[in-house]
Image 1: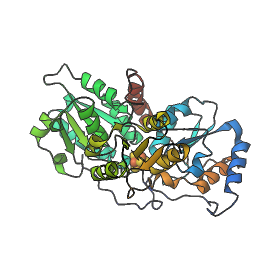
Image 2 (image 1 turned 30 degrees about the horizontal axis):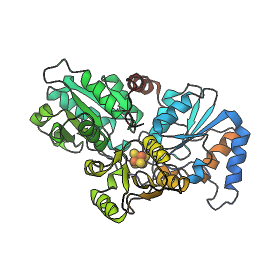
Image 3 (image 1 turned 30 degrees about the vertical axis):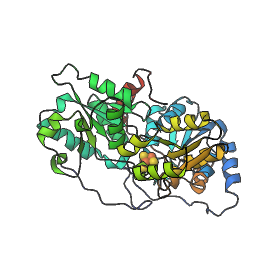
Image 4 (image 1 turned 135 degrees about the vertical axis):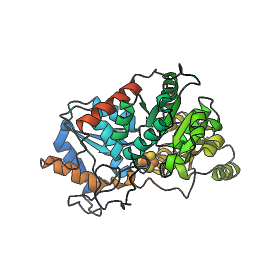
Amino acid sequence: MTTVDLPLLPLGRGVDLTSERGVECPGDLPAASDPDLVARARAAKAALGDKVFVLGHHYQRDEVIQFADVTGDSFKLARDAAARPDAEYIVFCGVHFMAESADILTGPEQQVILPDLAAGCSMADMARLTQVEAAWDALTAAGIADAVVPVTYMNSSADIKAFCGRNGGVVCTSSNAEVALEWAFAQKEHLDGGGKVLFFPDQHLGRNTAVLQLGLSLDDCVVWNPHLPGGGLTTEQLRDAKMILWKGHCSVHGRFSAEVVDELRAAIPGVQILVHPECAHEVVLKADLVGSTEFIIKTIEAAPAGSSWAIGTELNLVKRLAAAHPDKRITFLDKTVCYCSTMNRIDLPHLVWALESLVAGTVVNRIEVDPETERHALVALQRMLDLPGKSHKD
Ligand code: SF4
């Protein structure tokens, strides 16, 4: 199978419903300057009552988070949605792959709505099904696919999760990547030389987990570049590797640098560096603490008054943590790193439009995973849910 090169779609323009990338909003949005937006959102939500359940990812804007019935990371939110079978409408203030996961984990009669279809995830888009299937074909041709277990990060499209379900693989989150990798290697431990993991889309989470938690070496890891023939790797490199990392990254967390960590340590005496495992390996090596968004929140909540922190994760969350903990000095790790542009696509006008449309009896921007994809994706998600309870830093 050949890899299809995709044309670039500027956010909010063009149509590609199978991807995480932008599509045009089909509705008439209220103006962002409308002073009544807050009152309109409140009224629409009140009119819908228990029929609607609004989920807010930690990286969402304050103007949106104020209307969330529950906040959390992507997996917690999908589980929260599944725990509300009475809610007819799930309005997901997050990005496309999260709404897909919520649709997979909720009942068929529940409708999941993403207020702006342009809210995708650049990382999820770095592993397309055609590319992953081409990589799998290459591993088969090299005679090693039987030793490989595919592991996908939650931040991937539903068809990638389904690929893992069909091929003996599993989904993981930043909270349980360690146990998911242990499980994956255990599936092939009967083989001579043990097994291998093909990990996508985030090379950093894969590398940080394999090296810092499973004790593999950097030499055990190779990077598969989907834009090069054979991933840019020789058959020998593939045979020797334990971790085959997809060449993908988060466009927010991938921008933090080790130099800034040094500068902040020099500038703020006693500062503790707290980062997400989507950051590059050299940044994580210099940090004091590494963990998921939920771990970052709990760490700051438990931190003593007067302590100093520099946090490497999405800016909306860091600003909210700083506002909620004025007794602690909380700094964003890098002034040149900005908000997640796709998370920020969900704003108050889009939320008001989605809610008022529901009040008027129209479901807009429904995210619906086809039954076949859903069936296989659920297999990989269920394997994750069945993992032993040990959860890293969550
Ligand atoms: S912060 Fe990174 S991983 Fe999360 S939605 Fe944005 S681009 Fe994707």
